[in-house]
Image 1 (cartoon, rainbow, N blue to C red):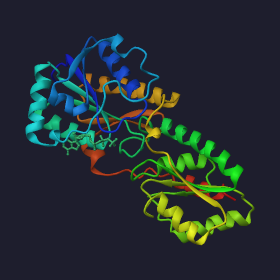
Image 2: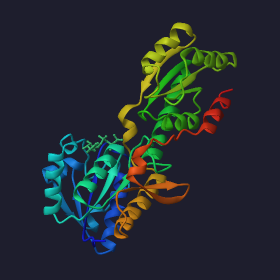
Image 3: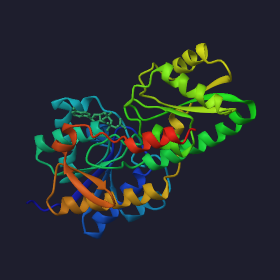
Image 4: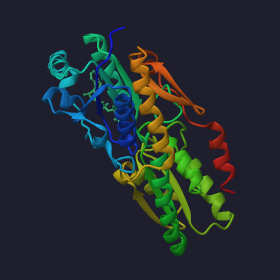
Length: 327
Ligand code: ATP
């Protein structure tokens, strides 16, 4: 095992609240172990463009409470090519970096795995995405904050829905994952939740809303995951209205506000534990793995394993409970 002297750290792919807390933890754990740290701006693009800087403990002062990422993030097409990665490695080597901490989603993990194998450089990944769609962990950094943001929005929308007897369709993020929709839907008391993992037909949804109407509900909220297969929230609302026209119907797409904001306590602590673990794993000679959490225990999983299959994260109990809670 080669001794590590200087660790490069970057964020890549979509941003998520709590990434800064992970950066802070990784930087300070490395410094505590007398290692140097280099921050790389804009993920893999910054390796290619050579936008790097030495970090000290004060470089990460007062960032634990901030959303986004102080290291910026990017999607980098050039890194997908051997030529791009060779350029990136030349700059990494020139900077004296001999290990990497990558914070991002599965694209970032794939890039890290390829890069680490090609140039024999140790790398440890940290799952940072609001979507909670990564294998090797129960939770990703940013997911809890995004849930809280969505709940806040649902609560506010419910005030206006109740005042006007409206039916609201609220689209939430998550790509192919229904995690945010299910959790925020339950926490926000949604009358129905459409998930990509469950094929809820429009007629089924209408039956559900009709039953709610019979039970004298005077306003309703349907949470629609962005990955739902009924053709998007506007289409769902239009098709429901064609057959179920008892309410003033409104559509609200929450969009990118779900990505921002100060990270929740849970995300700050999770990110701190993961940043700490990532550096310690590298220093103990582990490489090409992702940090994760199982229950309350921090674990790590080889990237090869984590990237080989998508973990189904949908809590089936909660799907059932959500239905019962709508009576
Ligand atoms: P999010 O889940 O928020 O989208 P992500 O990490 O999955 O985050 P991507 O854009 O998919 O976001 O990936 C981030 C970057 O990782 C890409 O822009 C690219 O530079 C690199 N990357 C992704 N796939 C590969 C690959 N197969 N080979 C090399 N690099 C890759």
